[in-house]
Length: 209
Image 1 (cartoon, helix red, strand yellow):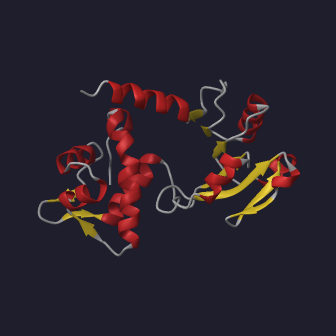
Image 2 (image 1 turned 90 degrees about the horizontal axis):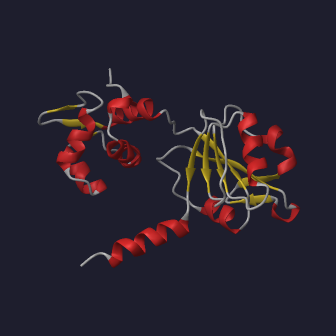
């Protein structure tokens, strides 16, 4: 199936594609083989007209009266987003936040799973939720082959850690460090800043009248 160029897809639409993919994988695991846009709309709380418009950017995916083939949609989004259910992620920093992420049990139906974690503190090594935690000295040795994505929750030597990950071939970083970091142009960083998010929320709620 041919799809349109991803550069033609609006940013807001791209941000909804992972939501659709997660829902579709869950539906498929529940035994749902085809679905109408209005049914999917109830599942993801997005208007059916928005869903049909979002899907139109990547080709003719549905049929009038039949709806969408769930497996075909999953395969299409996997190809478009470049993700896989078997994607292996790593986590660097197994402190309180890192361990909370390891215990977070919603990776299923999204982009695979955290394969292992790393920390510099010997007292934090072992396992959390069956995920092994290794010492940072073993980083290059223990990272799964082909791993592309790292979640970083360290609070010290952040840039040094980032540089090390990039040198290993990591091309996507979810950054919880709250520090300014620099990466090459071909590495993507998604910063998660809870404080800024709360500040933005307060500003928005203060302006609701």
